[in-house]
Amino acid sequence: MSSMRIAVHGKNFAPEFDDAIKHILARIQSLDPAPIVEVNFKRVLDERMSRAKDWKPFETSDELKGYDLLVAIGGDGTVLEAAIFVRDTEIPVLGVNTGRLGFLSNVGTEEIDLAMDAVAAGKVWFERRLMLHVAVDDMELGDFPYALNEVAIMKRDTSSMVAVEVLRDDVFVNNYWADGLIVSTPTGSTAYSLSAGGPIVMPGSEVLCINPVAPHNLNNRPLIIPSDGELQLVANGRENQFLLSLDSRMFILDGGRKVTVTTAPFRFILMNLEHQEFFSTVRAKMHWGIDPRDR
Image 1 (cartoon, rainbow, N blue to C red):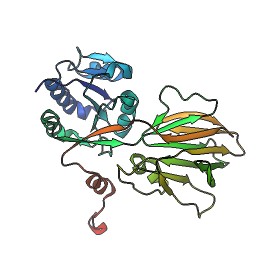
Image 2 (image 1 turned 180 degrees about the horizontal axis):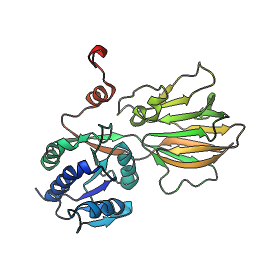
Image 3 (image 1 turned 120 degrees about the vertical axis):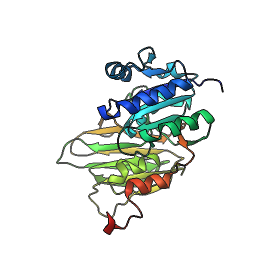
Image 4 (image 1 turned 90 degrees about the vertical axis):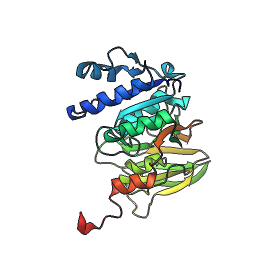
């Protein structure tokens, strides 16, 4: 098999993972003699181990053109950051977690050999995850106005509420009085939206979930809508500034500005091992099927 071109992104990790990280870096190098590594993660690795000393650093998504795989080492947040690097290249991302099992970083450090053998043999499958595109009237959202998990509008202080008026394709949906409003993808359904009482949505479902956070009107419930079409959100309230978040990236949103949410024209590609599927991850993370008396 000809060698693959592999890029690596990661987060600082606890010392007990040093051996596992050295091992995965060695396995990556066996598939690609000259991998590249994200510049900040390279600093971490250079301080902790000599394994990646001669690997080239990368800083921008342009440098990933022509690569076959990005390995994200950390947690689900690291995979969200990986989305910013891969953008519309549709380079698949393999998430290796150095902590508790994630929904996106679903390869444990003890599965590294299994994962790398599978990558080498092509025994993997790819999941195309929906992403959101966000535009705000007269406002810049940087060069990556996309979200893999969710777009949220939140109040900035503890006292007041935010009123978010929602339209879908110019048809009025509701005016939500709440601490905030989340528009979640299926990927994001197991993140912030879940904490706010939203449903678990299977990846691959072409739907979005509109979910108010601590709504003033208790009859407001999470709403599932088809992912096509255009959502328009306008926030108002006693405070005239709110927080707009795209995954973990925060912006200050002025009241009255229209936020337009559509699905992105590209997908985020998650690489999975053959035995991995969504329900086993959900069962493991949510402790489903375990008799509560046995816990």
